[in-house]
Length: 184
Image 1 (cartoon, rainbow, N blue to C red):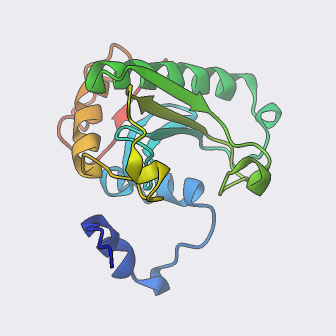
Image 2 (cartoon, rainbow, N blue to C red):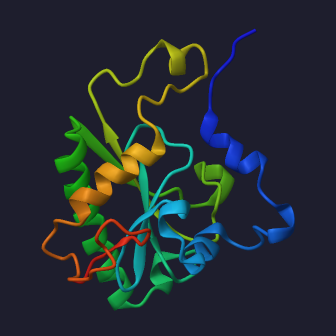
């Protein structure tokens, strides 16, 4: 029997179901205002950056509008521009922080047919890639090996987001539990 150690999953096991994870997680998480715990690393006026709980690689994040819509043409121009600017800032931050060989950025549109798990709330995946990051574990063993804990990735990305020129001058950003606020 194979064993995979995944200590971060204890949070899910020990959660209080009565506290309710009802609703769309992309709507619930930013409303909790517990950014570090929710793994929201950066926010802008219309969107936020969330570490993926089941990353393909370290640094796999999603850029998500606050508006609960299933189509890009349902967002107004301000939200679309904000999403694009935050996505660009996110890609730059990942490049600076993790120095990947490449990057994948895209959406799963169309629900199950497209491989998406949350089709009712659009979002963009940004996945850093390294030459040779596909190995026998994922190709043959149907298992992913994460080389860095999510909390460590969060800290590394947070530190670089905090130095961006768009980072709001906000003493709450300094080492706090709040995501870095970006203003475009």
